[in-house]
Length: 535
Image 1 (cartoon, rainbow, N blue to C red):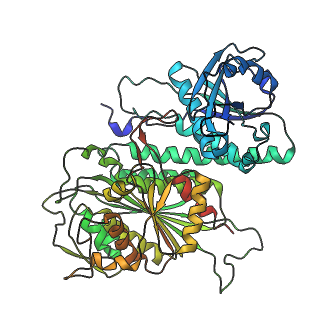
Image 2 (cartoon, one colour):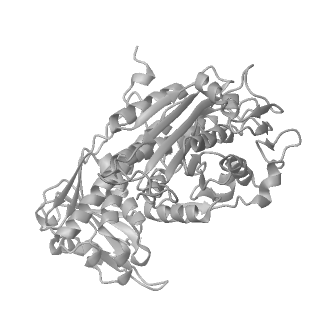
């Protein structure tokens, strides 16, 4: 009998193409064109403008636009069959909202909405008309560079394609088989920008979907060992160096915090180390100079493939979702996949600390004391605060490997969800310049993060009477902050970003541009953050 581990999981079969041609003469089952509302004033009626310079497309849509039925709201759609003057069989108009607030993120969502519209209707080839910002004269459209627009179209379409019903025996294949980005012929420099964005969007969108595939897997399939195998296979495919270690290596390194979590499970832990080394041009030195060495970036992910809470057992309600507790690890693996193809000029080391958190006769217990790799002693207050335990050793290990800047991602605390909900993920940092670089990266990526404090004022909340620190705060208040303060003990003065993605790693609601299921959050922002250090 075929095992679940051998069943084919989601792999996008979608062929992507970039074509430079007038929209009127392009034959396709579905041509999607974007529209914005350019009306100003709070109570003004919508005034719809299509983001195209094609007279044929504008004329084909004129009647429905003039009717006032289409308001241009983000994700709103109207379909026209056999549009006059076009070779396309159908014309889909997709709203991007108000022109004055238009960003590449709305374009990303609009592209996703077009794909999601086509899938249940059996439309297997979709064409997206490149949004031409010069179709409108408003100055607020000038901050939409062609590279980012092209990238956003690919990302949005690729992220919209999956449906996460992987193991249904009667699963219907609703895949879009072919996606074309259609742009009118333009000057050479603009063509190159669009081509660059297209390729970047394909790489990053596929990497984020790779992450989502990992996060979607059930815990009985994606054990720490299996996660290590998939990471190693990805590295072999993309040319990254990869090492996967288990209990013996953790013991050799003295990773007492990581081992404490792992020892309650029959499944062995996995320490995954992925390394990207940039290929330097001839004559270029490997470091800037002795006084200003080249940075080495450390990406550290929490990889708890299933979290019961351990002895501090979680309630049964919602525990099935805890397969997603390795989403931080998934984000780092996906980011490394993208970086291997984008080839930034900076060294990157990705570290995943993967284990199960299970109750058993060998599990760690409240009141236990463990010594982390750094030598700090930890009093266990709650075994459900296991993510910070494995990250503590992962972050310290990254420093021993030479990392000069660190970023970690984890579905770390329910407290962060209480504070921020499911729209913004939490971000913490001990260094202003490093945070500013990440903030700029998130603006490019379109992912939403909100900064929370981790200043030394909070240091006493994790102070232990019997050990150096406790693994939770002394009270229920500020739980996301006390978790960040715990991690800060292990990064010390190394510039560091901590992403608490607990509220955003799973899409709980269906939107016009995505299905319910794993989001792959943080992949795009981490990739951009790394590229910001590229020499």
